[in-house]
Each structure stands twice: as structure tokens, then as C-alpha cells.
Amino acid sequence: MGIYTLDLNRDVTTAAVISKTNYEITSSTAAQNRSIAAFVTEATSTGFLVNSQGTTTTTPLSSAFRNISNYFFSSSAANAIPVAQNKVATSGIARVITIGRETTDDAILSGSVTATFSFGVEQNKVIVDVPETTISGSVGQKGDLVEASLVTNIVGTVFYDTGTLVFHGGSDAQDTNFLGASSSGFQFGTGATANTIAINNLSFTSLNMIKRSMFFTRAFNKEFNYSNNPTAITNAVDGSISSNLTGNPTTFITTVGLYNTNNELLAVAKTSPPVKKDFSTEKIFNIRLQY
Amino acid sequence: MAFLDSTTAVIDAILTRKGRELLAKNDGSFQITKFAFGDDEINYQLYDATKATNQDADILSLPVLEPISNENTALLYRLITLPQGTLKIATLSVTPTVGTVDYGDNFVVTVNTTNGTDGQGYAATSRDPDIARLNAAVSNANEGSGTFTARTGANAGGKSGTTIIDITGVNTGARKEITITVSASGTTT
Image (cartoon, each protein chain N blue to C red):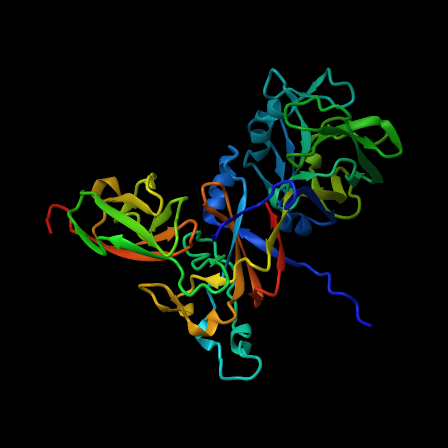
């Protein structure tokens, strides 16, 4: 017998493992390194764009985003982004931060987003996320982006699974209006400059969700003490075992294979150094598989 | 007084290509239910019976390779369970032992197990499936014997040349190779 059946109730455990990574972005360079882009989207196809590198272009990435806004907001018209604070009026303009998949990983952790903006010379406008408790959209959980000091001032929406922050509202009275003219831009950077909207700081936590299974593979004393290794055989035709190994049959485990019911090898693990096995020893290997 | 050794070796496994393929299907076919041990890197000839002690010191210091993702080569030599005192392990014999086949023709191989039984049948893989591709079904109607067919030409990958078929007994882990040569397209052997 060479392939043994696992007792799935006794030998196998499976658990979800979530790892978290914290990010803090304070410059356009850092944003670029993390595949984070910031831009303004407009209702016109010649949309104004300021990307995370701080350069201005007429390439209509922003208008491309405008055309998929219905994906995020279920708007009947592609360019109709609801204003954040009342969800009724619509806006042809919004400001967006997209976080690339290599940084987002599986999702942004809800409740982990904090961003500091300057609106012209008004500084230290801190925005945080308030996740929805019931998932209402078709693109996974989302949350309101609100002013930390006045949570009723809803300025945008964060989509955790896609790593997208859309700023589509805000209050003039609170100096947090993201619907200002596109010429005021939207880029990463420190400090406050007249007539610009700057992202001074963006911090969030990304989630990496994996499944981890543990397989306890056992070699009891009377098991696995012979080998098909050709160096252990003196006569390949009749299968005679090397005389060195017949007195005290001994094997050396270097590999553990995990199979399905069709005997297909699905996963493999290696021991190092080789593990000696004979009739007087038993071995247990805990094989960890993450996927 | 020393502490008892209660450790269990924890080893990280990697998915093979077949494992990744079945996992991606997400249809329940990725379910691990069995295991086996192997000793591919071991050279038992290094066992030095002339030494009074540590006869296996050279074996235990052998380097072990990292796991590889090719399921056909990741575990070649399985460890098996046999009664103490066994002098012979199972071997496979195939008929024919070598083959030459016309492009597009099938090549039928019969395999038998000696010194054991392979009631669960045999696993066979072609090292170059473009030259010879094995059909999915392996007959094991008679325990200890099986038959499978290697398809060639357009029924494989349309390539001529020589390839090797690796056959493994599921129960015994015994292995055998058979070399198949497929003639160039349009020619006969």
C-alpha cells in the first residue's frame, strides 16, 4: 500500500486566515509606488485629469471613470453620480482615488480609511469611513466617507472590494466641498495652496484572505518501511530488496504528497533533512497548505 | 530530567499544476483525501553496513530539493507498507516493452504487477502528450492487470518523435517506463 486515505474528520482542519497590511500615503511618489491614482471626473469627454504623479493631461481617464459610474452607483444615466449628502441630486463632477489591486489585495478593511485634505488654505480636513451595516450595492460592501468632526457631513463613498474612494459631495460651510471646479485639481501632496484640493494623507488597511488547511499525515511503526526507490533494489526485474535493508527495513522520507480520490497529486511538501523511518519509529507530519 | 519531545513537524506544501487547475475549477474536484510519502532524493547505496554506528549518516546528510509543481515528477518513488521480512517488492511488467507506431495509430499497452496487486489500477502519464496522449480510462478489470491506450497524431498534439510513458501502480507504487516512437506524419514504420 502506497497511498493512504485521510480521515477527514480526524486528520484535516481548515480555517480562514486574514492578514492585514497598513498603508499611509503622503506623497504622489508614494501613491505611484502603490498604484494609487487620484483624479477628477467630469461630465464632458474632454475631462480634466490630475493623476497621482501630479501631471495634467487631457487623456480622458476621468471621463472613462464617469462612464462606469453606473457600475458603482446604479445610476440610470452613465454620468449621473448622486451627490453624496442627499443621494437625490446628481453631479457631473466627482473626485476619485483608486487603489490598485496589488495594494488593495482582497479588499480595504472597512472602518480603516482616514484621509486628510486641504481645500485651498483650509487645512486638516479629516475624512473617515463609516461602513454600511447591510450590504446594499451590487459591488460589495461600501461605506460613507464623512468628516471626522461632523459625521453628518457625508462627502463620498468608499467601495471596499474594488479599493475605490469616490468623493461626490461635501459642505461649503464646512470647507469640504469636493464638487468644486475641476481646475482645483486633486493630487497628493503636503500643505495647502489656494484654489487647489490636495490629498495630504491617506491611510487604510488592506486585507489578504486565504484558506489554510492542515493535514496530519501519520506513518505508524509498521507502515512506510519499504521503498520503490531504485537504489533500494538490487534486481529491478524480480524486485529484490538490497540486502542492507532487509535486516532492518528503513526508509528516509523526503516528500509528502497529497492526493484526491482519483489519486491525482494536488500538493506536495518536502522535509529537510530526510526523516528516518523504520519498524521501531512513528512519524507525524503536519502539512500546511494555504490557498 | 529532560522535557519530552512532543513536537510534530510542520511543513508547508505547494499546489501542483493539477492542484491549481482543479482549485480554479471550483467545482468540488479539489478535495484532498489521501497522502503518500516519497524518498526521491535518497540514494540507499550510501548506506554503509560496514560501519559499527551511523551507517546512514551519509543518507541523512543528503540535500533535499524544494518541492516542484509538476505532479508527474514531484513524487516519483513512494514508500510502501509491507510485512517485516519481505525480501521482494512489487514490480511492473509491460507488453510490449518498447513501441513504434504509425502517426495517427493507437498504441495499446498491457501492464501486470508481480509480487503484489494493484487493485486500484494504474496511473500513466506521457512525458510529451503532443506525441502520445493517454486515454483517460485505464482498465483494471482483472486485479493486477491493466490496459491503456496511447493515441498519436491528430488525436494527440500532432507531433512525431519519441516519448516515454511512465506507469505507476496505485497500490504498490511500482513504476515502469515504456518508450514509444511515433513516425513522421504520412510515413509508416
